[in-house]
Length: 312
Image 1: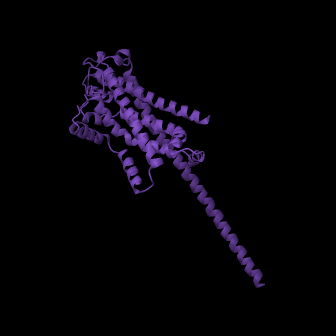
Image 2: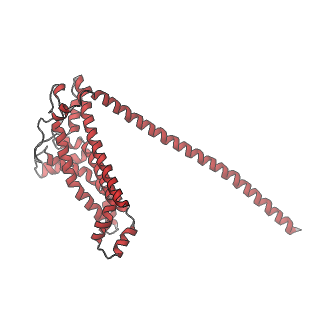
Image 3: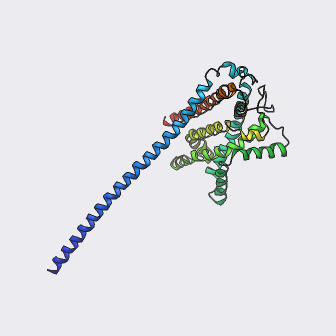
């Protein structure tokens, strides 16, 4: 009799516990669903605000540039008359500098990333170096301008305001970004692919050349070109190393003085004339955006090309 009473009490207790778990579990599920819907609404609102702001700005600049972006504007030098003003010397200056930055930053950045990921021992020194590189990627660009002025101009006594000094300074700016993005791309290659290559008797360099780099190249090139596009829009470092705000001839070599498109846009935006503020300046912005979008398009093309090769 006592055993039956004891079993009955246990069964009632289990039922109460099951009912409580079912009730509160269902309540928690509803709360989590509500949190999910709330987070989704927040993300949609944030995306909507960003897209609307960017679209409004683009429409405003595009409308102001109508009638100003033409072949004469792209191939002419700056002028104090708005209808004769052009962007050609600054366009060529930007292309010269970014081309040299690519030449300097690609081998240095990819080489440093390969060493840190494939050769360096995992110790405190490697972690310290990686931490400092990640911190350098977030340093304001004007600090790199001061570094370029202090080291290349004041210490090495190189001529200020030249294409070479501008390229060196912007290389310092983008190099940490290239290293970090290249490290992430190399780290994403599965270790099983490395072990399979070692199993075939390859050396470490052969494994890196034939396995790691081909698989990591889409991420490396994407990160590098985006970093170069970011450098093309920099103004503060170029001002610090003495680049000209306006120049009337395109640079003819790496030791020639130069100006860049952001510097000229900044100078034109300060002109008092209505045609400069609502015609020439937006037109120069459109040309710069076309150049940046072209670089991003190249990054997408290269990424897609390497991904297609990997699928084959």
